[in-house]
Amino acid sequence: MSAAPRPVKIAPSILSADYARLAEGVAAAEAAGADWIHVDVMDGQFVPNLTIGPPVVKALRRVTTLPLDVHLMIQTPERLIPAFADAGADGITVHQEACVHLHRVVQQIRELGVRPGVTINPATSLVTLDEILPYVDLVLLMTVNPGFGGQSYIPSSTAKVARFAATLHQRGLSHVDIEVDGGISPATAGEVTAAGATVLVAGAAIFNGTGSVADNIAALRLAAAPPPTLV
Image 1 (cartoon, rainbow, N blue to C red):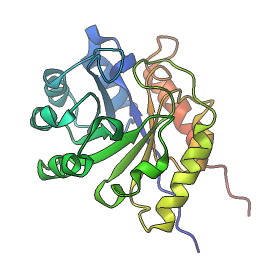
Image 2 (cartoon, one colour):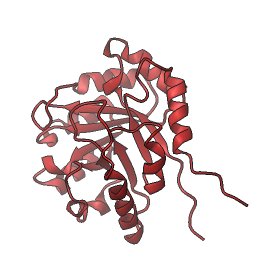
Image 3 (cartoon, one colour):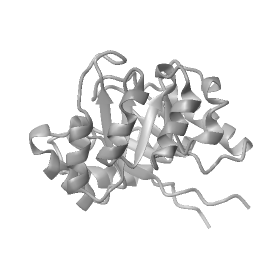
Image 4 (tube, rainbow, N blue to C red):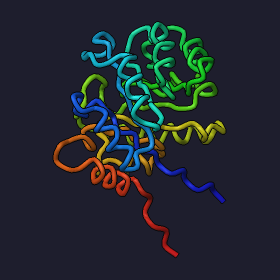
């Protein structure tokens, strides 16, 4: 008998929130049942955008009890990992493409008492993760090219998620979370969770001004739920 699928986690991304009312947006997400808060950090070099640093993570830590899932889209992330850990990050994810010594960086994150994760861009092969998988708790598969919110989901990502889920199962690493980020909405949540994703990052689908945060999270969770089993 196969194991029951794990409940899917919803991680609202503050990249699409109103930064002038960030604490309110995070509070609304927490009240609506979000599982994590996703924090996108960009340096204007690894990706063509510039966002936030450790002080914002520290401020968020004061206003929410939810795990802070920090995604570092930056060059040489090892320089700033201690600062983000000290600010209150519960998880730190670094890009395989940005780390010359990836194993060393993952060790650095874990030694700081933080959950280590690794991410790859849409055009990066899953093979590049083969050697690091035993050392991480999470892998983030980008489903858009990183750098901006509100992009459209890349359709070929679904098959990539499925291939990766199969790899984890074959290697006895099914405890590793598969996070997806980019174009995740009620229209795409069902297919990525069916393929094996366990954490859904969503920004524009949650913080969009056209529906309440609570309604948007509820719609996403409903779309991600597995279909009922017929008896």
